[in-house]
Image (cartoon, rainbow, N blue to C red; front, side, top):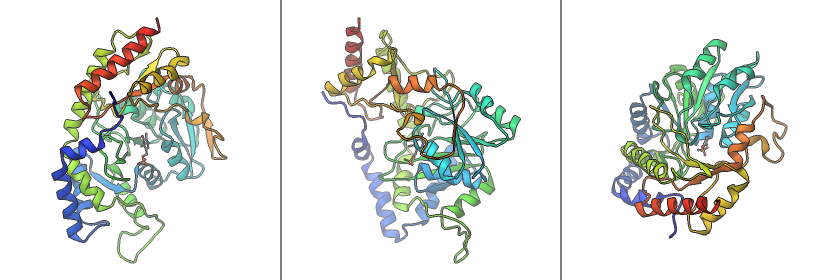
Length: 374
Ligand SMILES: *Cc1c(COP(=O)(O)O)cnc(C)c1O
């Protein structure tokens, strides 16, 4: 059996009529850039996610650096994040001109460890950039307590966590801005690149809107800016899909529970930690081999048996070749947990359209490998 890592075409076919109708609507409107479909989707997204403002931008990476810039983060400033994230998190800090400060992650959730943040704060620290890695919210109350104590901004990297929430908080409820990505493999994905900034701050909304459009809020009037817009065709696709996101998240959670149960007896792997009361949206279902030296063996076993498993991410940012390429960067303390994560992670297929027999087969293969380890 072949089990794919993504179900993009299955998802399209399931709601083809809704998506096709939106695309046709945009095509017939004659308005493709900053048109009515983008405005409509921004309203829908803001309402759905309970944010005052939602601004569509070119991609998730731009959402991050446009937010940082709009909040006044730039050269001479330090932004604290963690080393086991997708590369774009750090890239965005550098694009904004700031220095990236890398701290270690929590050994269970693999999200930023709030206990490590405070030691990394200096007079130059301007912001904290937690990532809701794999789809589980970072510990926002703890992060906000540190931010308030030191007068820091907080920008959430929500590229993997859309539709999730914490036990006592929603994404964006406490921070200055939340940034997400709509690239197809994310939980809410369009048919190309896309991203969005959510914020409750009117000043951030106004500034990001200007920055994404050549510094222009009014025809012929420009200040410093860029070109990073979510085009209306993608907004139309997302408008059709956002109606289904909650149901898709529920399906991901149901699959995670099947994996949890099916892998419960495995003694050579660790299953992902789901914090009580949190809505973990399982952008990825990442297991770790207890022995990092056996990871590649498990990965090879699964792919040899048709299960398209992957790694997220097998090279921590500070271990990339040539790091940090002359960019401003500081590593604060040991990054041992991030390195263990990189060395032992295996992501199993996880998408709402996975079929029961595919889930079962994946579980069987992991168990088979586990049993062979003695
Ligand atoms: C995908 C991703 C991004 C970047 O999104 P793009 O739309 O590809 O630019 C940023 N941060 C994290 C954690 C991601 O997973």
